[in-house]
Length: 428
Image (tube, rainbow, N blue to C red; front, top):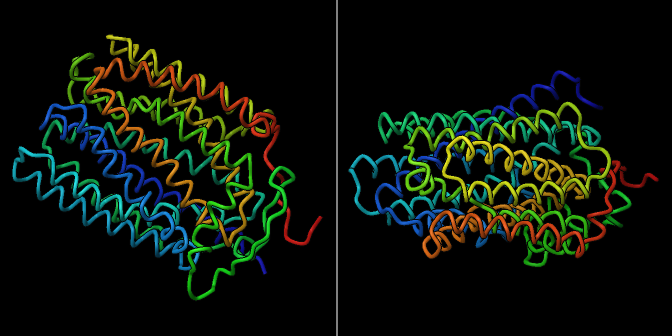
């Protein structure tokens, strides 16, 4: 029997509140940590190492975190991960209060933060497809993406203002936001039709054989890598996820914004916060348009074009010395990235069965982590060698090349016209 609509809607509200708070905390902390590390050391390489410290746990634990998200209550896994993040943030707060002159301990605490996030992220990202009927997944995904974009605006601006007043205040705000997110996610209730294993399959996905029962007591290694095997058999999934990986890996200019702001644009913490928020404003504008009128035709082609626009705007960000033009470039590149996020976030749950969704999303989480945190490391190394401007321009050019190459390497992705229709197991 299907639960009444109000119950389902309250679960959506609770999940969106949790995601908004956790994402705001993450964006706030990323903004101030980059500023703090660069103020201490003045080295672009350290900005890259900061991203690497957060990404490494997701890569090292990918075979574990996905299985846990599939075998245990995803709400509790997400909440536990958020509590772990709070512990690491409290450690950063305590260290910052000592007026530090070395960045090493910050890297260690960020690594611990990454461990906690590696467990919470796949569990939380699997929840949108767990709390509504399959046909409503795109509707929830658009609003889920909207919470991230809202956080991308509020988090950096709030972090910049708080950091300018007291460099300890941002971490207090992170603790409050993460605590709210942990409590809210525990209120979420699964939807009956989503919990049953109606494998959501489309013609472009091919046949899916859900061989692993979600309540099986012990995970084996072969089961842990099921997410990797599944993605390899789905050309559209592989193309969409790897496109994001390489595009943002090369074009990830955000990590170098503290250096660009200080050396090229000549603004401080508040200016940095607003520049990062410009990315959120651009992405939010596009996301709200997608929530009102989602993409339905030429999905693959629009995805590739969006990545090309992302690369071109990144080049502009790297060459300009004008803050206003840099702000505009951030608006455009983040708006283009929002299209990529929406397409990928809709495709993945629609063509992944419930029993494998946690493992697939854990693998995708590594790809996303690679495209952001590992991309930050690549940008930091390139920035140390070429200067921040040279590194950003080179990354934008590489992103343009990736968009063109993927169009040829993944014709199935390029030819995707619309999102797959949900089909229940044994039907059609």
